Structures are given as structure tokens and as C-alpha cells.
Length: 188
Length: 225
Image 1: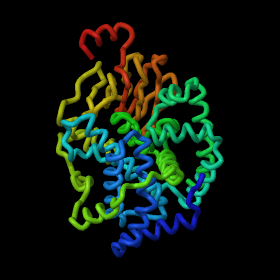
Image 2: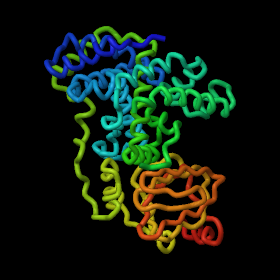
Image 3: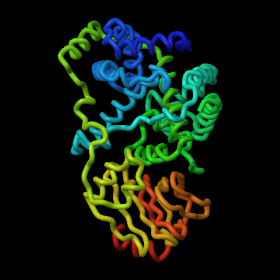
Image 4: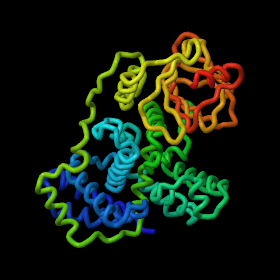
């Protein structure tokens, strides 16, 4: 599996900062080229059709353009920041669908992103450790992690989908979590 | 620092954005009060970022970037501009609850107080229904338990998630103080008692309604709680 190395990670952060500081359209185009197809793949796996996925990607990238100044490379990688934007947009949509009568400007609909600013001693190193841990997860654990994240599946749904006993799904998840937690531990 | 924390499944569902709204409120509440889980929640979000990097990309349609730049040039603010700016105050009656809620949950507290008053569950225990959608037959409530008083022995059809907002309570599983999270499954029958000296307020979310056992249960069912 491929993952941007530290240098690429810094390059992505440079592009976001260029957008924030000077409205650099060339830098934004490069960000779009990297992020949009990944976001689209993510949203497709969550069950959006092609047109909806493209529309949501446009909205997430519009937020990237408008909120570039709120990105802080000391707090997160560009990918994590953008993942959070996409996650929040999805929550926002689902909540409106589930309770359309709710005031669309209701503050509750503003999903809070966890503020990790006070908690992470060295985000870049934690991120590198985390990526290394993910790349060495046994395939069956990575598969479950991806199903949980990208397809929003519960443990029970994953067990049905993969035809595994629920206990097996739970114990594999626990193994994956404990590896990832151990990898992150020293940096938070 | 709380001593009872979020399990990994809830951290995953939080980062994946798949918690139902009532449980999301509870998780945000614990994260606000617990530095350790705040760091872990950030870590799980970083797992999402790392997975986004490693996903097999799917090509965007031709001209997608040009269409986006046209929207930007037209001054389109996108979805976030339709929402109320953060920090907007929703009015509601003054109540000690507001002071013990983490700031992110105060608008929800004010709105819930404005919608319906506290009601008495049993002597020494009041309940406020939170104005948040709950999954299936679940509930999301604040319980206000006078010092030294207890919630009657009860069990649940589903899981119960309890976050302590003020004071502390004790039950068979130990002591729970501000920021602590207790999760009990349907097999547990418990009788939490607030410690003397301070009112204990908790946020309680269930995925099915609670059931009082014993004589009070009969009264509860007759009253339609």
C-alpha cells in the first residue's frame, strides 16, 4: 500500500498554505488533483452514486479553498484535515435527512471536530508512526478497519458481510486498535 | 482526569462519523472533559486521513476543477455558509445544568430546557429530555440526582451510556465522577447512588428505554415513563 512519505506530506501542507496566503490557484489545482479522486473513491465506498460523490467532493474542495487559513500543519496532516471536513459534511447531510424539520441552521448540526491542539506533542511523528503501523497490519485486520471507516459498517454488519462470527470481527478489531494505539501512544 | 473512558469502538464510530446523534453528543461530551480521549479521538481521525491517502483513487469527470473554480469566482460560499456561525447563543431559561455542560453542548441544553421543563422521576431525581434525535427506541436525558439520593434499581432493554457532568455516583461497578463514562449492557441491573455533598448530574443515553425493576417498576410503567 502506498502512503505519502514525509516529504510529500510537507508538499501538500505547502500547497494549502499557498492557497491560504495568496489564493494560489496552481497550488489549489495540484491539491485538487491529489485529493479529489481520493475523496470521490471514499464517498463511492460509502454508497454515494457517481454524481452525488462528485457533488460532495466539490463541496469539500470548496471548503478547502475557503478554510485553507484554518489549516495548521503542526496539528494535522492535510489528509487528516480534509478527511475531517468530508466526515463533517457527511454527518451534516445524514442529520438533515433524518430530521428534515430541524432548523437547518441549528448549531447541533455543526458536528464538532475534536480539537487536538492541546493533546498532540508531535503530530508529524505520530502520523508517521501511525502510517507505518497501518501498513504492517495483517490484511484481514486492515479490511475490517476500512469497512468501519469507509463503509460505515457496524461490527454486526461487517460480520454478516464477511461471513465471520461476530466474536472474530470483534477480536480482530481489538487487535488492530491495540496496534494502532500502541503506535500513537508515545506521541500524545 | 476521568478514570472511565471511551472504548475503541466508539472512537472508531466517532471518527467514521457513524454514531447516531444522541450517542455523538455523549461522545463529544466525554472528549471535551477528557484529555486522554481527546488525543485518542485525534489519533483515530488521523487513521481516517491515512486511509484516505491509501485508497485507490477514482477519476473525477472532465472539467470538474473548472466547474469548481467557476463557483469560487461566483462567490459561492458552499454548505458551511448556510449554517449559523459558531458561538451563536440560543436563549433558554437559566439553569445550573448549563454551567456543568461542556461549551459545545450548551446550545443543546438551552434548547432542551426551553422545550420542556425538568420532571420528577422519583423523590430526589429529576429528568430532562434532550432535544436530540435518538436511534430507534432510545432516549437521551439529563438526570439530576440530589446528593445522597439514588436512581431506583433498573435495567435496560439495550445499552445505557452514562456521562457524569457534576458530582459523583457509586454503584456495583465503582465510583464515577465528572467526565467518567459508564456503559452497561442489558444484563446489568444497577442502583447508582449520588455521593453526599453535591448534586450529581449525568447525561444518559440508551438505545432502548430503561426499565425500573421491582415495585417502582410497576409504578413507572403505570405512569408511562
